Length: 135
Image (cartoon, rainbow, N blue to C red; front, top):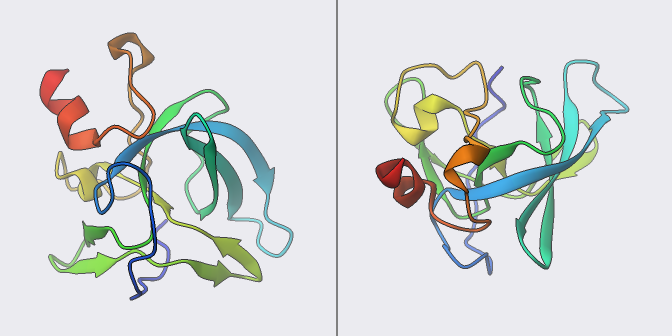
């Protein structure tokens, strides 16, 4: 399920500013105002976590996932692009987006989150592009 596109500014970010980076799912909660949404807490560095509202649910606590923080430009299903911004979705702040294979440029699937293999030893905050090129 795609969430609405949003424009925005480019606030201070993690080490790989403007890129889709590796995060780890720490917590998943039900959204209080939308049965189809989840509130996901992801860690993107040893000291930095973000709350992200997500419409997909194919991940679990402990999974490594691609994260686009505010200011990151990602592809859209219609062939365009969107800049990720901090937004409120149904009353809950979302500080980014968990990315599908479409946003990573590895397939046209935008209905699931692209899970990163822990066997390849992902590094929190590392560029997903760099990670995928060494896999």
